Amino acid sequence: GENVEQHPSTLSVQEGDSAVIKCTYSDSASNYFPWYKQELGKRPQLIIDIRSNVGEKKDQRIAVTLNKTAKHFSLHITETQPEDSAVYFCAASRRGNEKLTFGTGTRLTIIP
Amino acid sequence: SQTIHQWPATLVQPVGSPLSLECTVEGTSNPNLYWYRQAAGRGLQLLFYSVGIGQISSEVPQNLSASRPQDRQFILSSKKLLLSDSGFYLCAWKPGQPETQYFGPGTRLLVL
Image (cartoon, rainbow over all chains, first blue to last red; front, top):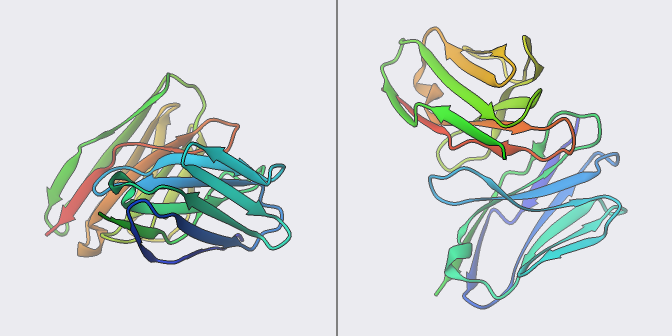
């Protein structure tokens, strides 16, 4: 089955700097890669996703890049703000598979 | 628009007592439904998922069970709770396509 590894497990960034979280996956047939943000005590919420026919996707300060050859994808947050502090989860799935395989999460702390 | 509800929001139960958590989805039909558990400070563990009424797939053998008596209702149960059952229980739903899962607000369970 699919295996998703996520690094780093914790990340501290000065406010205004950029943050990058990386994930690798094992199943070359995976074609859908969402990122979720989970604030303390809240549910995970989808913040951005990418499909394998696209190499990069941006939404304001958030971007995701995908390298299918190397089987890794990354979340980039620019101009970080205190409200970006949360746990971020990556995930992967492939068409026909009803499940998402999640990474283990990255706790991002923005230092004012 | 679609909404997902979970109740109760919080629950404190003694070891050995039964459990019933409920999840309902509004505004869609024939969704995939999922139960996840999240231990404190940890990742998302998939417990069960269902692609239709009466169809349950179990991911982790344990003292929990799930049922789907109606199209938009998913129930998580236990006959006898263990201390290790404490955690944050999240229900999620997914339309047939695309692959995105959306999480409910969660139930925080403390077993004493």
